[in-house]
Length: 51
Image (cartoon, rainbow, N blue to C red; front, top):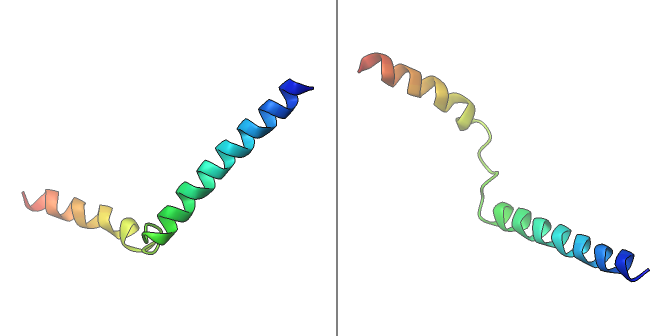
């Protein structure tokens, strides 16, 4: 029974860590721009053709 409680606490701690990392990324604006990464590969391809 102690093992189940220990694993539960560890899993809650890991989940809290992932949630904190996600919220930190949202706060820093990492997920704000969803359009330009899709277009960036096209622009890089055009730059490589010019070289």
